[in-house]
Length: 270
Ligand code: KIV
Ligand code: NA
Image 1 (spheres, rainbow, N blue to C red):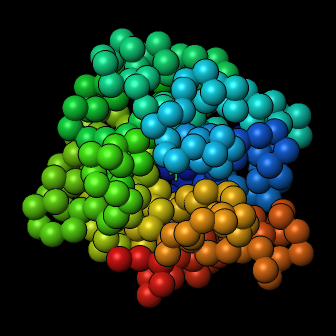
Image 2 (cartoon, rainbow, N blue to C red):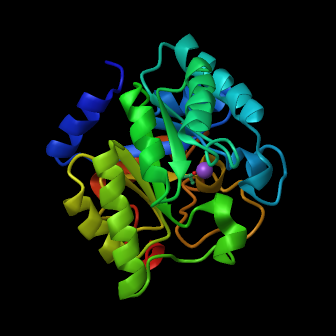
């Protein structure tokens, strides 16, 4: 297998093949996800909840992100894996200035990331441009942006209604113009995510709770393995019951996304 790269993902998209992404936070899960055929592994700041027992992602530090990023990178390399590795820039590590973002992104890249992800639209566009011009691939993240949960008033659907949809659309177009080559759309109406996908040919849309019309899908690994003991979000499917193993469950996820049976717009979308 050849390593997953940005040109390869552009080819996949042109061929109509969905891009699959899952989170992983350690060497073993990352190696299993890679072996199961997931193209992108996201070291998400959801590790704050999954690994650290925090109430939100707000308390996750750059140092912690780099620790998990390095573990995942070593795990994938040890099995000669091919996954594209994305690292979340955590809360407080990129909002001050583009220079602060570059400093933080550099550390994540040195820990093994191929791309960094940051949340928000509007003010983020100049920061994205600054990173991209300096050779750091960027994944944007719009819709429900968990780092701003306290400002948003909770974990709820975003981009509902004409005005909110128009704002989200203009932010997405600005981010593509700034050079973002991927964008996570979290908890936005399926129709909006599908039309944005058409409008963003150079920026691959990766949906989570955003319907099936995106270029790819992402889930939190522990959620799709049924290991979330809290309230399971509606957009998640537990792939474990019908699989014989964790690798089997991840393979089933990859197959379901590529075959169009996940997500199910009637159950997993707004
Ligand atoms: O941190 C995370 O897991 C994420 C994904 C849910 C997109 O940002
Ligand atoms: Na995240």
